[in-house]
Length: 272
Image (cartoon, rainbow, N blue to C red; front, side, top):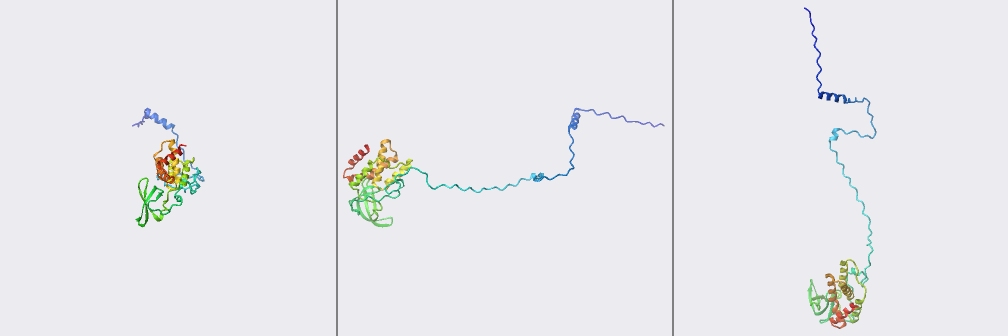
């Protein structure tokens, strides 16, 4: 019986869809990966090795803070800036820097030790009358005290007898000294020209506290002249009133006139 060979028919090519066409195009366009070079790598001096993935994943260590040393401060001269020269007081120091009152005026032959009934001038309260001399204890210290009644307001003031000069207690000025004080009022100068007003106020206050009739007269003069230019502020009126209470009554006693007559004489000075 004859052997018959059966050949299988070739498989029909698969139908090409649009998806397969696109995939084929990409496969043709994609270049092949370059083959790994077989040349040995050369080490480049100064080049830093690439960080590995494990090293990159670790957080970098914080660098220590660098603290710079402080720069030395510039040297500043201790000399004050130049400014207006202050007017000098009776003791040669700037008037607005007076810290201690000048020595009391000479008594012109009047007794240093006061008696009951004598008139005495207290540097902070003005003219008073010695009403008594008593043995008192004040602040744990015993001694003789002058008891003064201030004529302007009736206040009672006690002054140690052995320290009356240090306290600035003195007798009424003489008529010649009163004329010199009135001449101070006639002067055309300005006692204090500091800026701002707070500095001028302190300077005028120191002049009043000095106990010198000439310094108090300068305050009275400056405030009177300022009154003609503008309305005085509260502080300026206070300075004017203090100067009047400390000076006018003593001048009236020294000139042997009434206070009204002396006030008219002072007003004539400032009208000129």
